[in-house]
Image 1: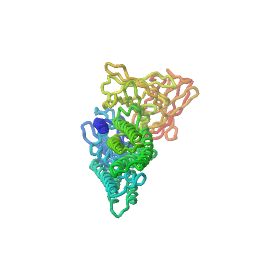
Image 2 (image 1 turned 90 degrees about the vertical axis):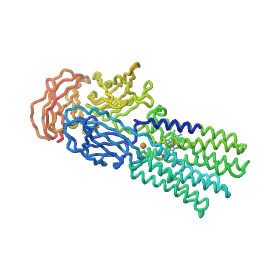
Image 3 (image 1 turned 60 degrees about the horizontal axis):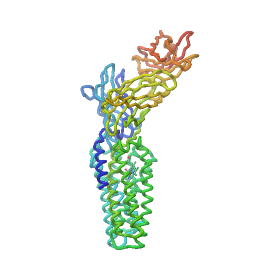
Image 4 (image 1 turned 90 degrees about the horizontal axis):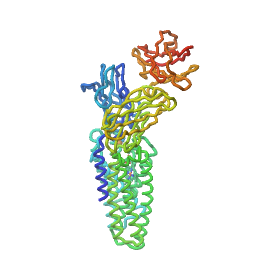
Length: 624
Ligand code: HEM
Ligand SMILES: [Cu+2]
C-alpha cells in the first residue's frame, strides 16, 4: 500500500513537471540570446549541456510573421555538444530561434527558444522559452521500471543460487527456472517498451544499447536450456545481468553528463540493488515457500542471506547518496522538484524496507519461525516493487543540477522562494541577467516588479538598477551594462510581490576580464590613472558604429569630470592620424567614446586624459 501510494505521488509530481530544466539544455548560442546584430548572420549555432542527436534535433529560425528562414539542415557543429543550421539571406528585423533537442545518450527531449534582432528594430515580442521538457510518458516509465526489475530478478536470483543457497531438488529447480524466465522476459519487454517510447527519434547509440539489453534478457531465457547444469546456468545469467546493468549505466544521466565517478557509482548502485532485491524474491519463492526446512538449516540460510543483503544495502545507499549530491542543487530539491520527490520516495521506502527487514530478521530469525519470515519477506518484496517504479520515474526526469554552461549560475532559497540567477556571459559591459523565481514546483508569475541592483566590491562605483521583464513564466530577464568593470559585483535581486514583503536575494558575481567570445576588456595604466577599456559590440564589425567604454580610476576612486579623448593612432601596425573623438562622461568614472565606423583591421586608439595630458594605447580588432 505504502509503495503504491508513493508511486502514485511521484507519478503525480512527474505529470506536473512541465517546465523543468531538462536534459540536453541550451548553454550558449551564436547569435547570442537578445543579440543586436549590425550584419545578418549566415548560420545559427547553439551549444547544449549534453550531446544532442542531430537527427532528432532541429533549429528553426522564424521572423515575426512566423516565416521560416533556416535551411532546415540542422547538423552537428564543430564545438562540443553543438548544433548549427544554415540561413537564407535575412533582412533587418527580429527573429526567433526555436530549438528541439533529443539527448544522444538517454533520448530525452528538450525545447526552447530565444530571440535576436538584425538592425535597430525591437526584439520580437515572442517570449523566451527556457529549457522545457515534456513529462515522461507512462510507456517510458513502465519500460524503465520493468527492465530494471528484470535485471535485478535475473541477476539477484543467479547470485542467490551461487552465494546463499543452490536450488535443491525438482521443486526448487523449477521455481528457480521460473524466476529466471520472469527476469529475462521483463528485461527484454522493458527494453522493447523503451524503444517504442522513443518513437521515431531514437538516437542510434541508445538504439544499440537498448537492443543489447533486450538481447541479455533473451540470453537469460536461453540459459534455461536443459543441457546446462544449474551452476553453469547461474554463471551465464550473472554475466548477462552485469552486461544489462552496464547498459543501464551507459544510458544514465551520469553518462550523459560525462562524469566517470558518477558512472562508477551508478553501476555499483544497480549491481547492489540487483543482488539484494533479486535475492529477497529468491529467498521467499525458492527457499522459504518450498520444503519444510527448519531449525539450524533455516537459521543459517537466513543469516547468510542477511549478510549479502546488509552489504548490498550499504553499497547501494552509499552509491545512491553520493550520486544524488551531484544531481541536486539544494536540499530543498527533495520536496520542490519532481526529480527530488522521486528520489525522496526512494529514500523513504528504503528506510521502511530496512526497518521491516531488521524487525523480521531479529524477531523471526533466531527462532526460525517460517510463517513469520515469509510474511515479513512478502512485505519487503512488495515495497521493493514500489522502489523500482520510483527509480523508473526518477531516471526519466531531468535532474535539478544541470551544467548550465553559463558564466554564473546560482540558486538560493530565500523566504520560501527558490531564486536562481543565471548570467550567460559575465564580461565588463553588456550582459544578460536571467532570474528564475519559483515557489515549490510553481513558477512565480505575479511579481509586480523584479529589479537587480548592482554594486561593486572593490571600488565605490555607486549603485545601478536594472528592471527585469518577465519573458517566460517565472523567468525575468534584464539586459544592460551595469557591470562596467571587471572585479567582484554584488547583485541584489528584489522581487516585489502583491501584498507581501519583498523577496531579496544577494548574489556575488565575478566579472572577468576575458570570457565570452572576443570580449576584449583591457586594463591600462598611465602615470596617475588606471583605465579599463572595452568595446560594444564586443566583436566590432567593419562599417558599423562602435562604442568604447572607458572606466577611469584615480587612486582607486572614480575619476570625475575629466576631459578624455580617443584618436586612431595605428592600423595593422602602421601609424595613422585621425581627429580625436571626445568622450562623453556617464558618471561614476565611466566615459564613452562614440566611433561612427572603422574599416576591417587591427586598430590602436590613443586615449588621452586630463592636463598635463597622459595617454594609453588600446588595441582591438574590427572584423569584416
Ligand atoms: C531499494 C532501494 C533502491 C533501489 C531499488 C534503487 C534503484 C535504482 C535504479 C534501478 C536506478 C537506475 C540506474 C540507472 O539507470 O543506471 C537508480 C538510480 C539512482 N538512484 Fe537509486 N535505488 C534505491 C535507493 C536509492 C537511494 C537510497 C538513493 C539516494 C539517496 C538513490 C539514488 C539514486 C540516484 C541519484 C540515481 C541516478 C538517477 C539519474 O540517472 O538521474 N537510490 N536507482
Ligand atoms: Cu535525461
